[in-house]
Length: 91
Ligand SMILES: [Zn+2]
Image (cartoon, rainbow, N blue to C red):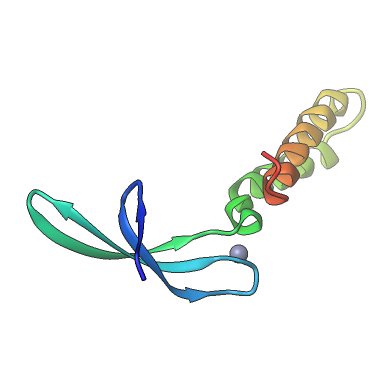
């Protein structure tokens, strides 16, 4: 059964335990029907790019000496907090 969505009608082909889905999307493009397959990420996997940036920021913080690391710790912590909120579906 298809669901009408922003980018066309879609249905779930496969779903993983985490919530990620493989979807078939049908839409019209220049008068023709186009069928494509997309991955709809769950919040945890959708937050992966932000988690990566937070890890990079913490790596930079951990490899920098006091007092220059004080500001880096603040930056890394803020990135991590945003990534965790997104992963938990709160942002
Ligand atoms: Zn997932």
